[in-house]
Amino acid sequence: MLKIAIQKSGRLYEDSMKLLKECGIQLNNGNKQLKTVAENFPLEVYFLRDDDIPQYVYDGVADIGIVGENVLLEKNKDIAHVFRLGFGKCRLSIAVPKGVSYNSIKDLDGLKIATTYANILQQYLTTNNSTAEIHEISGAVEIAPGIGLADAICDLVSSGSTLFTNGLKEVDVILKSEAILAANKNLTPENKALLDKLLLRINAVKTAKNNKYIILNAPNRQLKNIASVLPGMKSPTVTPLAEEGWSSVQSVVNENDFWEVIEKLKQFEAEGILVVPIEKMIA
Ligand code: ATP
Ligand code: ZN
Image 1 (cartoon, rainbow, N blue to C red):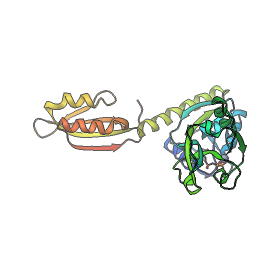
Image 2: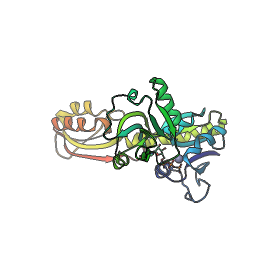
Image 3: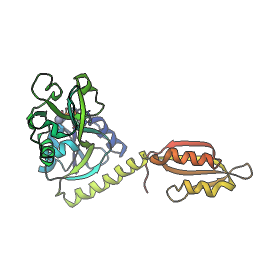
Image 4: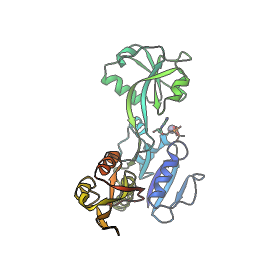
């Protein structure tokens, strides 16, 4: 039985549950209990505070866990960062009051920075030979400058609206973070095999999200050109249409090249282009 720790409630909860579901893992109970066992995969799910997850994985109470990279780096436990999951994206940034000018971290020499991420910030200050002083607090960091507790803050930002409402501006990004699947470094061979099985599924879900299925009609004289911009998984599927001289072409396009590919297809006289999402994709 593989044991996974996920956040009990908060910003990573929904996406973590969704990921397990997309991997075909059925969970009966929500996060009302401390733990639950999947119905169709040898997986036990523990619902915990995100800050506790690195320690639990390090101790082997859980074998693997889903947690923000920011928390992993702050806790700095000797555990493996196995997979970047692509959700829970945020930045750990320095912010200063709106009117203050800032060119580099050296501008904060001798001043106080409030944060809950003392370890990550300390490392950044040391690397940059900064003499700023860290004021570690446990929450509501964004109000620290307003009440005279600090001159700047170092906190998580996603849209920046919390900073804005507190009269602050983001001036320096220390870390770009996202949710990570982390694992204990001494898994049993059985659990290692289960983790590999889970990773195959996570990969399939992630690859599918990055790709779209595309279907179009094209004149036969353009098929070579069209195949050159639509490599697909091997090569595109081409079937003749009832109308003489025309074919239907089916393939897979990567999200990153999507619009570029569509423009080229139009140049090569493609018509009736349909684009559909892919649920799973196994290369
Ligand atoms: P817990 O009760 O589990 O301790 P928390 O309040 O510490 O929860 P959340 O605010 O739910 O944590 O955030 C969990 C994680 O979500 C963060 O550690 C971070 O990796 C990620 N995250 C994404 N966007 C943001 C954001 N705008 N602010 C804070 N965290 C964010
Ligand atoms: Zn937390």
